[in-house]
Length: 94
Image (cartoon, rainbow, N blue to C red; front, top):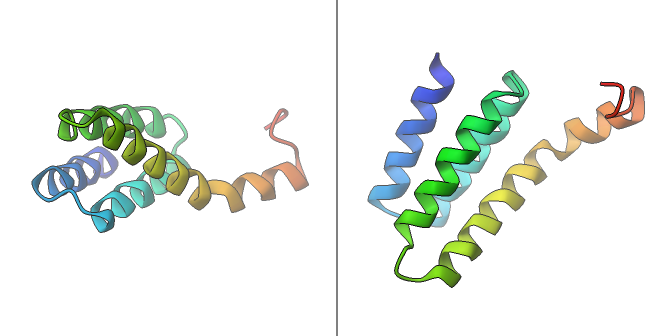
């Protein structure tokens, strides 16, 4: 229950002041949500991408850049776990 609440809180903070620190916090929480339960990432990513798109509606280029940065950060934070699973079991069988 805490995962969506914190995601909403971080999204609200980013909506108030769209700064790189807020985007990083959102990406970090996305990674944490994925590691807690894989289905959480769907909800957190979907809502975060919509938030970023709406926040930067006036500049579609900036919106796409921020979405790419968000996705890259989240993937980078989850990458060590993905490598660990791939080395030990394989992502396919997992």
